Image 1 (cartoon, rainbow, N blue to C red):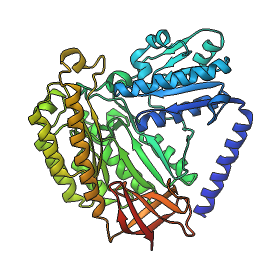
Image 2 (tube, rainbow, N blue to C red):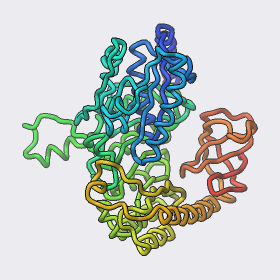
Image 3 (cartoon, rainbow, N blue to C red):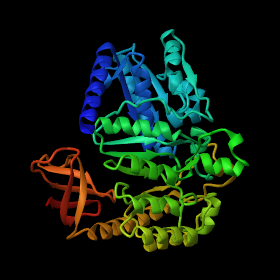
Image 4 (spheres, helix red, strand yellow):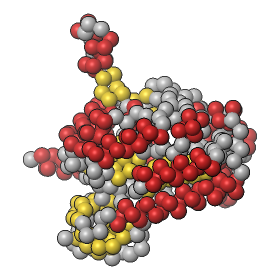
Length: 477
C-alpha cells in the first residue's frame, strides 16, 4: 500500500510538472560554477523563474534569459566567468533581445562594478536576492539595468522546491545552512554569502520526502559549514525555567538532524558537505557509525598542516587537534574515507610550514582532495592586512609537491578495496564505455563495472578486481 502511494504521488508530480511546462514559453539557460551550493542555488533560481513562465534549455542560442551563477573563491574562477561572458556576448549579437544576468558570489562581491565592467550584463543578483528576480526582470524588460545584492540574516529558501537541473535522477542536493561566520582570513565567503543561518528541519524533511517520492536514492545535505547547523524551534517560554532549558528542549543540531533523516528515510543514502574541523563533534561521527544509510565519507578541509599557518588563516584548530579528530573518526568508523582542501603559498608560508603540510598528509593519507595555490581575494582580512609574499614559482612547486603526494595516497586508498565487495549506487553509464555502468560506493569512490540487466538507481554489490588512483574496477556479484 505504501509503495502504491509513492507511485501515485510520483505520477501526480510528473503530471503537474508537464502541465506547468506546457504553460511556460520562455527559455532560461543557466550555468553554474564553483561549489555544490551554487548548483543547488541554480535549482532554486530555476524554480522561482518557472513560476514566471521560464523553462530551462540546454541550448544557449535559443535562450531568452541567460544566467551565470558565479564563484569568487579564487581569482581563476572569476577569470573563467569573464571568458564565459564573452561567449554570451557573441550569441547576444545574433540574438539582441536575449538578457544576461550574473548571480552568486561574484555578483555580491563586485555589485555595480559588474554593470560598469561588463556591458553585456543586464542584471546582477546576490545569493540572498533570488526571490526578487521577477521584479528585477521587469526592470530589465523596461530598459533599465537591475541589481539586488542585499545580504539577508534570515533567507534560506526553505519553502522553494528546487527544479533539479542536469539531474541523473538518482542523486540530489538539499541545502540545510547558508552563509558562514568563521571569518578565515583568506576566504571571501562570509562577505559574499553573509551570516550563517540554519533551515527549519521540517522543511528539510519535506524536501527529502519530495525527492524520495520521485525515486531519488541519495541526498547530499549542503552548507558552507554543515557541522554548525543549529535550529531553534521556538515553543512557549513559560513552560521552561531558563534559557538553557529552552535551548535543550527546542534546539536541533547537526548530529540530531542527521539521525532524524537517516531514521525517517531508511532506504535513502545520505552524504553531507562541507565540514569544518573546529565544529565537527563526536556525536556526528557516532551517528554516522550508527546508520548504514549514512555514507562513510567525510570531506574535512584542513588548508594547512602547520599550526602557525592555521593561526594566520584564523582557523580555530591546531594541527594536533585535527590529527586527534582524524584518529577519533578512524576509531569509530574504521572504513571512513576522508578528503581534504589544501592551500599552498598563503601569506608568509615558509618551507618548514610547507613540509608540515606534507607530513600531515603522510599521517592521514587522504582518499582524495582539492588542492590549489593561494590567490588574494579583495576585501578579505588577508588582503587588507597581510602580504601575498610567496613567489608564484614557489607556489607552483609546492602545489605540485602536494598533488603528487595526494595521487600516491589516493592510489594507496583505492588499492585497499582490491579483492573486496562494495555496494554501489548506479548513477549512469561510464564516460569511457556505454557497455559499463558507473556509480559510487559509500566512501565516495567511483566504481565501474560491466552492464548486465541492472538499471540506473539500483544498489548492486561489485567485486573489485582492479583500480586506478581515482576509480575502482570490478564485476557485479
